[in-house]
Image (cartoon, rainbow, N blue to C red; front, side, top):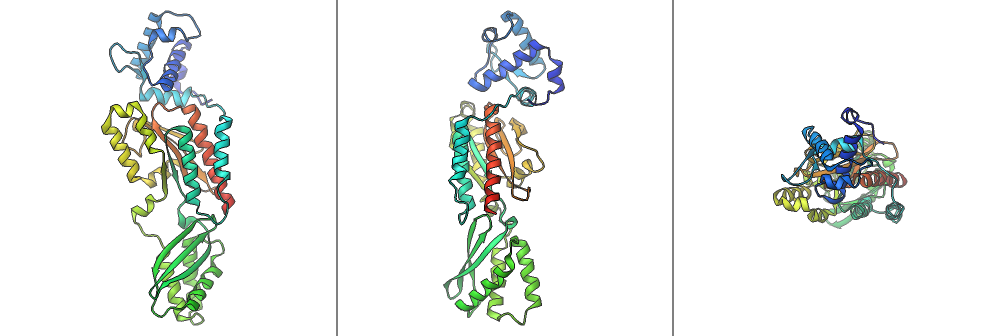
Length: 361
């Protein structure tokens, strides 16, 4: 049970129950809630007129609103925030949900496979369970340990640089080769790099190579040395934003098209789909999770990533074997998400992804 906010504590029992019933009904149906409906669900017998007075008080507090003069009430963004912070009850995950996520992660190969493919499968499972869009931010590659490097000749002036990371991720990059390269010099270059890899990250390995080549310059064949230098230049990531967007895996965006509230405002829906297509603000997405303990919920305009005000983001960080936050898992959907169900799903998925990365390291 979350900590009660001061505003929740200031409410009397009746106001608190009316507020909770309105929000829970709205999250379930998406429809405004009227006083007559509430008279059938409250724990105490009170008149519809009494409930209308309570709802009017809650509206004056900025917690409820009504879309039409004659309609019932719906929670405002402030009301949803108060409910999530003070009244949301997060129950245990359903057994079938847990089993599906565990099966998805369990089916992913632990060694020798691209970790991005495994995360894509996890994201697809999460979007399927939540009927929202799932976002999984894959770990940045220059923070992962390098296990093996290989140079494969393609043409007289080109080679394929194969980078195998300790977590199973594999990257292939085509690079230009110095004139006169031979299979023998490529093998020597690869052997030299692999002898220094030893679990170092790409940045650490590049530094170790520079120091070792300066120390042993006379011992290393000239062609092999040039091959190593060209290889280091090829694998150092630049600041291309398109490369950064490859880290964000989005699945189930089409689920958002079925939300009636979004359909009622096509401009907001178009804006959200554009944001997802561009995979904007990757760094800010990870920043939401860094330093957080567990799941964070961003409602409506609180959501700093996507311009659609009527959306919510439920996000949780995941860690590597060193207990360092390296990525995040999230679900994006309408503000009337089933928070009580989705929060544990996102939390558990983040734990499974962290475990998957640890087993691959």
